[in-house]
Image (cartoon, rainbow, N blue to C red; front, side):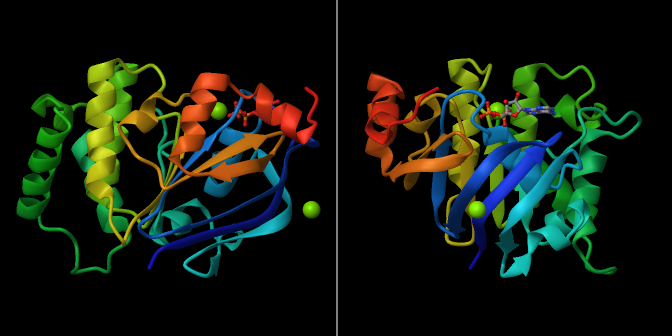
Length: 252
Ligand code: ADP
Ligand code: MG
Ligand code: MG
C-alpha cells in the first residue's frame, strides 16, 4: 500500500528557514488537504519533496514506500511513485503532449514492458473525454500557449495516465472557473482508491466542496498547527485563520 512519511522536516531557502518541523503521513486510500495563509511554506513543502535544488533540507526525513526520498534524484522520485503537479517544466519545445505523457509512462517500465500504442491511445481518449479536453491537445506542444485552466486540466490528465501512488497537488484550483473546477475534481475523484494517496494544497475551501478530504491540516509558520476532518475546512471558510492564531498564541 502506498505510503509517504515526512518527519520533522526543516527546509531553508537562501539561508532563511521556511519549513520548521513539518510532519505528515499519507497512506493509500487517503486524501489530505493542507490549508493555510499565504507565505506559510505550502509550496516550499511541495518543492522540497520534489527535489528542487533551491530548497535546502537541513533536518528531518521523508520516505516513500519506506525508501529515503532525499536520497533520490527527481526522476527516481517519479519512478518511486511520487507525482507532483509542478514537476513538469512549463514548456518543452518540440515535444507534443501525447509524446511527453507516453515517455513519462514508459520511464518507469522495463524494456519490452512499454505501453502499446493502441492501449495508450485508448487510455488517452478515455481520460481526455472524462476531463473534457479537446482532441487537438494531444498533438500540441507541451504547455505551449496553454491557458491557466488548460494547464491544470492537463496536469490532471497526466495524473490519470501516470497513476502515481502518491500525488501532491499544489493550488490545482487557483484561477479555475467553476466548470473547470468540477472537471478537475472529477479527475482527482476518479483516482480515489486504496492504491492512491494524495495531498491537496489549497488556500481556499472551495475545492473541498467537490473533493471530500479525509484529513484537513492547517499549516502556519512552516509546520502543521492543527489537524481535523472536513469540518475543519468548513470552519476555516467561515471564520478564517485568526481563531487558530489566537488559540495557539501565534503572532504574525
Ligand atoms: P505558500 O505556498 O504557503 O504561500 P511559499 O512556500 O510559497 O508559501 O513561501 C514561503 C516563504 O518562502 C515566503 O516567505 C516566500 O517569500 C519564501 N520563498 C518562496 N519561494 C522562494 C524563492 N524561490 N526564493 C526566495 N524565497 C522564497
Ligand atoms: Mg527540529
Ligand atoms: Mg503556494
